Length: 117
Length: 111
Image (cartoon, rainbow over all chains, first blue to last red; front, side, top):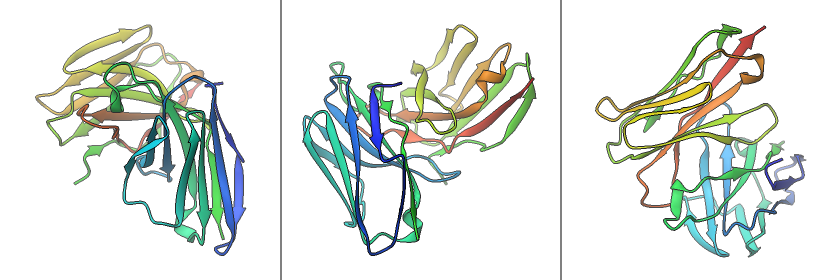
C-alpha cells in the first residue's frame, strides 16, 4: 500500500445525485492532488492543495467542488454530473523537498471508479 | 499537437525480452522526466526520475533522456510477467505543480 487511501472504490450515480469522494494520506505530506484518468487519455490534474490552501484549479467545472479540511484529508464533492465525467478519480500526495511543485514524488491512492448514468 | 505523445499499445512481448517504451514531447522547457507504473486497479507509482539529459539505471530499468530530440525512453531488461502494467511518462519544467502526462503504454509480458 502507498499510504494513500480512497473511498469509495466504486461509485455509480445519476446525474441529479450528490456524492463525495474521500482521500486520506498517512504519509505526513503537505500537498494533495485530485486527478481524472480517462481511458487512453493522459492524467488530468484537477486541483492541488498545499498546506490546505488551493494552489491549482485547472478550469474544472463547478460541478466538482474540492475541500481540504487539513493536510491529511481531501474531499471531492460531486453534483449534477454528466456521463462524460465517468472516469477513475485519483488522489495523490507529496512532500515538498525544498523546491516543491511537480518535481516532488507523488504517491497515489487506488482511485475511485465513477460511473455517471 | 499534444504536449506529450505516447503510444497506448498494447505492447506484447515474451518473457525475458528487452522492452523499450518511449515518449516524445514538444516543450523544450521540460527538465524533469518521470516514469510511473500503474498496475490494474491501482494508482500510478513512481518508477524512475531523471533530471535533464542522460541515462539513469536502477536494476533492470534504464531511463534515457535526449533533450535535443525531445525523446525519452524506458528500457526493461529480462522482462518478467510481473512487469505487465501500464507505463506512464510524465514531465515538468519545475515551475509549478503541473506534471504533463503521456496517455500510458499498456505492456504485456507473456510467460
